[in-house]
Image 1 (cartoon, rainbow, N blue to C red):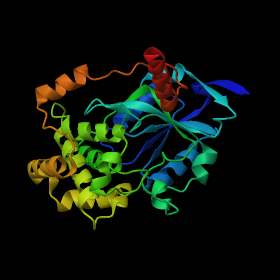
Image 2 (cartoon, helix red, strand yellow):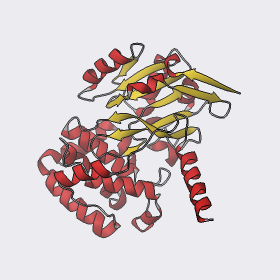
Image 3 (cartoon, rainbow, N blue to C red):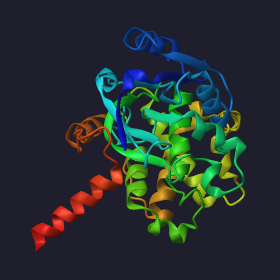
Image 4 (cartoon, helix red, strand yellow):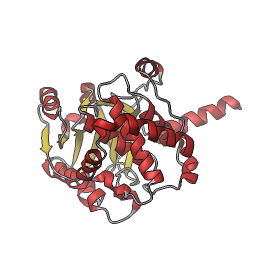
Length: 314
């Protein structure tokens, strides 16, 4: 049994913490989604998502991150809810304004209150590696194919660095677990691809250099600093302490160069120091995702491509 439901039937919650342009983005959201609600300043990813669930008057709701602007056409779409996905989280891809990547990081999502209130992640983790720094390893967390928003994590040097650092760490993990540098090659190729781009592209964007520096520093910390607790990426206060202690705004060129050399030589990560012109060129000509179906999952799309390729070879 399935139900086709307009997205306007669901509550929409804008979840903000300390994003510099949150009020500016909120004005745009209110103008285009007048029924939207806002939850602000709740510390901890698990607690913040629970606050968003509590703010929703509908069992299923749409969540917008504080540095995200939706494609407004998204809210003219319909979700097809079936017995198989009734409790599932849907996370759509977002375009990253710094480096042009399109994947789930920062994208629009749709949750159920039941799922959120029952989950135990990040600061409320039950201790399993899969839940300490991510939501996405739950089997009911569905990564979707289509791209329905743009994320702008470049709103200050610190915020760009924090976004890069967090992704630098998480893209080096395997199901939330740390890898030995010798094991890095077995990490999923999509993660290694995204990490290389985070570390290389963005010189053409204000504060893009800080995002690249953060990604390099995060990857270096999780791969080579055995004494560092990688779960720090869940705690913005701990990240701010790293940023201040390392005096990143004064010393970013040194961090950028030294961690870049280490990641190339010790990890075999194929990263470059792309110039402004090279960054623009990369983003202009990299792959552009075409929306297919709002309910299409990434895995199903990839499977269909593989099957099509097999048919051609036959």
